[in-house]
Image (cartoon, rainbow, N blue to C red; front, top):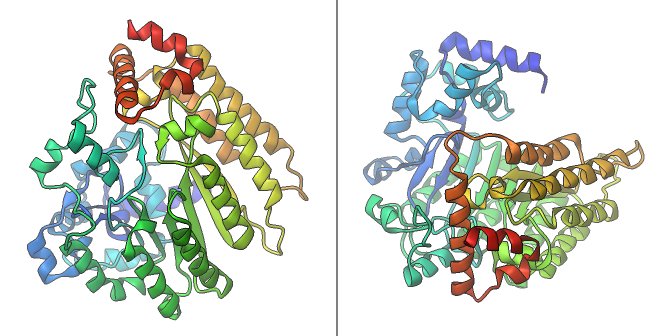
Length: 461
């Protein structure tokens, strides 16, 4: 989308107020397992009052808290909870996410409707992300109890990790009343979702199911089956599902059977399966505890071979343990891009590698590494660029500029200066984390990451 387009959108927004943002109406992430909601993803999630939900199931999105922020925006104010965007706008000439999100196809055409409606009016969002449960069979190093039931089990057994901030302690969550519901418990937030869903579905542009591990939730398949049966109410839906692809084969096959019906019979506009990996072999399995690396790729190939209209997006949370094998991950993705390149009359990429640098927990960030390690990130970017240069009009299965720049951006982040980043503390926390990880899970950090043996010994002292 052009800069001119974004400038036009910003002028429209500013004509209502310097803090006006359509995403406060059009986009929502709902953590049903914890009873939390936020619009967009930058403000901290807030608790959905059960008394509001009893009267109005759409209070999963239309809370009184959120309506007050909408009122503030329509009256020219800039809600404090949206300061991520205000910091961008006040300190640079760049467009903030209030412009980018308001310019999205699920937002921009709602401008007149929203401007001409009262701030108290309930609104069906166009872009919805939902987490039904934190039930998960993985314990990824950078994850935590709020997103993984396996992490809850570990912390309840052993307690928090002995880092400077007690990594993944759960007492604060309990005190705030935001511990996830167990999958076996009755959940009033999930009940409210199903009351709202038939009305919400017809207005959706994009619907994404997150987790936990969504394929371990019966509600995920209930949604998919509903779409199968009622697709004519919304045939242009963009559907996305997150999965670690490490669940039993029967659940993967069940997903693929439904996905084939949805895509081959044009019951959705598009279907994207999001998954994750950020290293190779044993190093990947160390980072994503529970991962069977070979099974992961086997399932990706199964999707690519059976579902040519489905896009697989690998979301890589690039962290300190990724640097030594990320170039091999790029090799593997490229080989699959070549093998399953979609050369039908319409063109799309069947497989994407979407690299994002990990910022939290800080002790797993690439910033903790030595310069020689950080240089390996740049080498990975060069490899992706090399594969990208091999593209021709008849050979378009390399890496796009966006995919390459996201890897390069990780290097820039690694070498950049960060305000108040306590390098010594985070390196100490890293050592404490891997030591405790090995003790609890029977792993051997030095054996899996021999490239970091000197680093480990140096900072262990």
